[in-house]
Image (tube, rainbow, N blue to C red):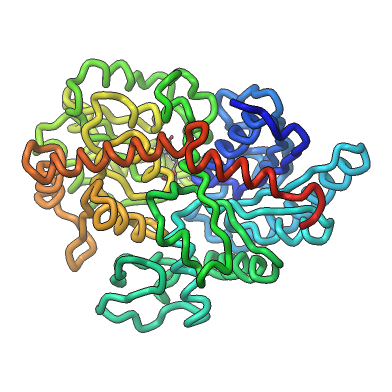
Length: 480
Ligand code: UDP
């Protein structure tokens, strides 16, 4: 690949959670393959948990303390608001000092790239006259929805109607269940929306606002073109997933994706998958943050056992060590009632963690039961695996809409009035997606088509590759 950008020095920072750091790391890797040098700023804790720390020429890490050097802040922690404000304080100070020292040492950064939830990073760049760009790590459609609502409503949606909503620029209508949950007045995570709003305000203050988007032009053609008729340029450069899994050349190159926070090496899941027939296994994972109730987990367990299909299920430890100690026991025994039965089942395997991109690209995987996180969605599309969506919160609802209605590469499961999805329903969906009927065949055909679009986009000369190169050609070496 032509390395024609040796003069670029990027500073990259992402919010310190897996789903944000993964695409940001992939972005860093792409930049280095184009000849740019990259400093990846992250917290001491996340850096310490990077498995297979990548040794990539041109890439270095710079770490700072967010006050959680021994453990990661979790969604259940009640002090997330104070965490975000502490991260803002120490992250801003750190960015300032690293940008200024690079300048003093005569090797100034040419661009700061930051992911969502970090509007303060853009402010630091502006203060120090450094060019900066937001790497939007969700769907372009989600950006459009946020943008539209801030302009039309300016706030949470209080009275969402059951009628379909038409948004300018989107070629499909949305129901309340398709809207990102952060926009709904019932959303308890109030820290999130003001930060998205701030990002949009900052962009609108720029002379030529543009963002890099982790998507593929052909996945979201209309959404990318809209945003108030082109006021904000959206540059698709995705999917930001390890190229080894996209180009199919060297799947052993797992060094730079997936396993940032946790890994359980003794779980020999790949060997287990090798023993299974092609397209026979149901892969189940709900990402790194979503927590399903014990009742819901049991319904899923009954569905899997009842289906007779082989399954690989990631069940994370959802309690921190501290919580376990407070509860007075070491194991997460909330799950034991069905776990033993599942573990006895020779047709299934449970792991606490896996390298998901590796699993999805395994020939035995027939479908992915997913919470529809954007990374998981792109990884599934990039591997041509049909999805059974069970969205939980944030942008997952909109992603599920795209998966089912726009791309036809999966189905979306819905809950009953009590918010529970019953085993019989889940089993019915699994049978459709894994089955040889017309619907199953359609889903597989569409998933395959999307896989080749994803691969085309990142190949040299593909749309995302060209967009990234052209972005590098045009970004100034000083503030623009
Ligand atoms: N992931 C993984 N192994 C697991 C679970 C998750 O490698 O056992 C990775 C997955 O490949 C994805 C990320 O964690 O890149 C999760 O991001 P996503 O946007 O799908 O969901 P989130 O966790 O942010 O809700």
